[in-house]
Image 1 (tube, helix red, strand yellow):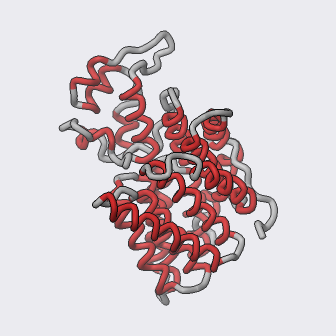
Image 2 (spheres, rainbow, N blue to C red):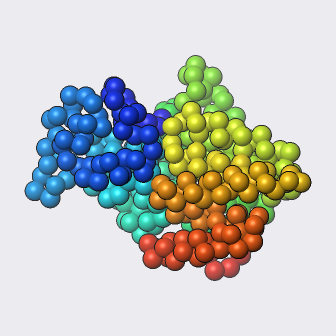
Image 3 (spheres, rainbow, N blue to C red):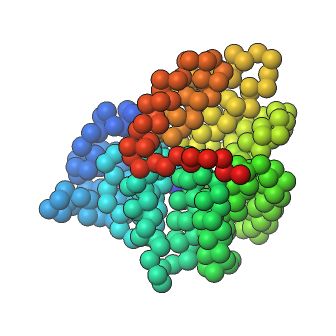
Length: 333
């Protein structure tokens, strides 16, 4: 939905956005009008102005930058432009969370909890904050927020695509929460329900509209199979996530999908492919500034090749705590 948004209508974008790191190296002052015209390659960017603080004053390019960081080719982009409106607060929170800047991300999500605000954004905000807790082992606390997200999603416009997306995010989150607490049957039932709703909605619409939701279902499905020790089921689900992520165009989703795939390969007698892919994910997560994924990849690599990822794991943990992450202290069960 939001993948590769900076490429829309801009002929030269791919030359400049081959990777997030190339972008950051080439455009350290990305808020200047000249840079935005260059990466855009289209006339709309020529009309950008800056206020006294140097912030982008045009909301359309601002949204595109935030979306490109949240769901596109530059997930490590920082600093990010200030958000205007609920969608931009959500996009900014997603991007910040992917970088492990949890305190800043939660501050953005607080804007979506205001009384009387749109139910859609309240739902997406709650499920996003739940994902931050779940990433650090807080499945029980995450389930409370996912429940709130589900409740808010059904109070929105039921027939709209955004409402279905929010509902699916909440249900997939609840499935992941159940998985983290060892409730594999509940997890599977929720994923099946979510997939069936997406199937019906896409059938009515006559096309595929929920790539991000499909990727998340594949992630949790693969992780559930791994928890059951069923590597034969885990691998095709992980491969599906990799395939969908490539189509979606989000670097962060691609890195996460390869991490899940690396885990699915650990059931093979030869640990070489899993180790090589885990090392690749570790390097890419570090390259793009995706600290939570770097931490997870370091733990996987350390398990496959003891000592190899331990130093990076410890550094990531320190960085996550420094940026406001809250590791769960006890088992979520």
